[in-house]
Picture (cartoon, rainbow, N blue to C red):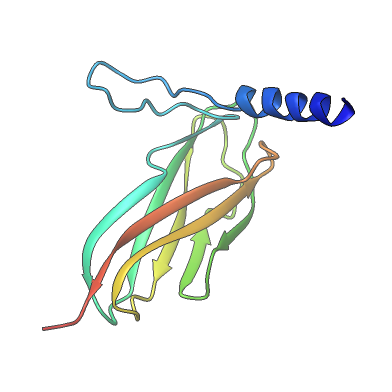
Amino acid sequence: MKAIKISMLALALGLMSFSVLPTDKTGTEKVTPIAGIAWKSETVDLGTIPQGTPKTIEFEFKNTSDKSVIITTVKPACGCTAADYTKEPIAPGKSGFVKATYNAAALGSFTKTVTVTTNIDATPKVLTFKGTVQAKA
């Protein structure tokens, strides 16, 4: 009986964690500020890029809170990506950036992430970029 109660509780909590993102009239997701940071884009599709040519992706955001945002850590998911970001505090209403430079050494499709932690939100934000590396002609 105890196992059933625990299972039901886990199921209820799991179902409560699902949410639906609001959409505009075109059916696309709205960019919703979470914890005072509004990202211009959280996913970037690079399309096809040439092998051996590093590609830099810039993720921009705006501080929508009433206090300064400080990026505390930025961690690329693998050694094939280097990261840079706004080092100084971003005042309310101002913008900052996170840059990821992908080395494009391996051929084929890829999906990479960069995890960003700030002083405003205990939950890190995962930014994603994807594309296909093609051999140079």
